[in-house]
Image (tube, rainbow, N blue to C red):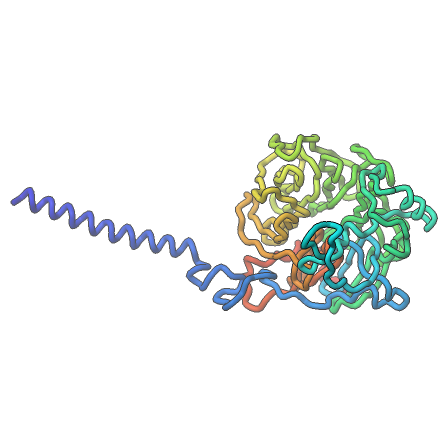
Length: 448
């Protein structure tokens, strides 16, 4: 009897333990999925019928005004949208590769000369602005025409293939590369006075640590960084040697983006054909560089890079995040170039366009392969992603630049669709899913 009793007791204790363990496990699992408990993983909790096409944002349709609304410019619209920077909610810079003809999308037609059952356009896509736009060149109109007619569909000496046209002023024109808007999308300024200086303007910024609010433009084809007065009336400084590539203190090899530390030190991703990060002091004096040419697409050695197409700095820990685009990874270094860590992007293949770090220290990027905005923590853990490919308002097609203003509005520049879009945070959106506001600028309280 005693043996039977002990067996029954052991069974009862085991059953009780199982109940407690399972209940505890359910509680832990419930804690691990707070979004599910709150009504799903949508950007707005308990939203019904949502697909999070625009994530935690609503697109502001019709923003900004088209460049065709300028008197005398009715026949032209924006070329490839390279970059955008929000100085404030009421002053936003858009950077473009010239202009394209302002024509309506064609009606669908069959193309039997190509193959059976082939029609164009497909799914609303009819003009890839980054292919149709001029790579860009400065100089006189005669210089531009000479440069265009010399292409004949071949790569030029800088490795940029020309588009299949040769008529400047008909198929494209090199005007209004930098446009300034107010919060309603009205055109405040066009910096046409500098169009002749640009060849392929790639990104535009104002340092959050600069009281003068000087405007920086990185031009990857001119191999230079230009610094202008805030009003655009003067060119204050040129870093690099225009039209001459290299990898030293005074030369770039198609630079792409840059970012700052609070003391004014800045880092340049250099670049499309370069394989390094270049570090400068606040005055633009060269300090150091790191990066070695790797063997894409499977280069795994630390510090070896191919197509260095993005850089972002965390001002807190002073870590430098680098988009090693053609090796499909993000590498992390300290401010002196010492390798810290990395993570590989598992889209097959990935093609990241840029990096951004805001006040929450999260790392945002855009993957051209998946057409999604993607949020990681600084160890590479996926936190959220949104977006779908489309030329419609709110769709994403080739996001190449991004910025956030002090109200939390998000701005995205798209090379393929040839536009800049504005997104406002949705009511009730999970703040953890929003692209964080940028580092608070020293000039935040100044009159804009």
